[in-house]
Amino acid sequence: MSKYLISFPSAAMHVAPGELEAVSRDAHAVIDDAKAAGVYVFGGGIDESVPPVLVSGDGQVTDGGYPWAPTLDGGFCVLEVPTRDAAITWAARIATACRCAQELRVFMFDPQS
Image (cartoon, rainbow, N blue to C red; front, side, top):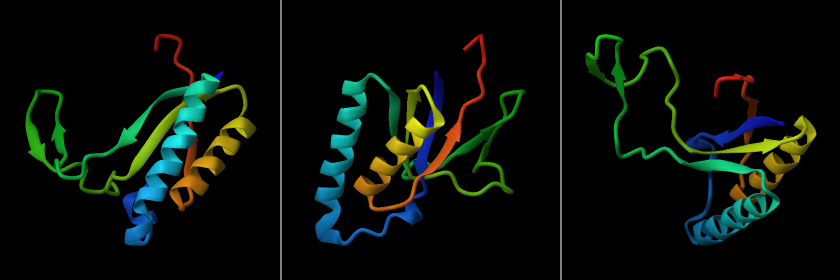
């Protein structure tokens, strides 16, 4: 089985203020289903109130991330499923719950992980 990253950037969510509670409820219901199905690995959201730092090999810390990379924010989950089609099905359920499209990526297999 492969692990898949399902994610969205914060800017993708356009939810009316009164709808946020329903989005949260619906998203948590899908995650509960994934847990019950035994495919949930972990998930969460990037805490955007804590700025990133870049740590070099010698331990030097610089404020901010890679200057050339897009900002990493939003929410994500990692699921372990048997096929890409299964991952697409879960991503579609999450997209419906979150009211925004989800990006799907597969992790490369690493036998030491």
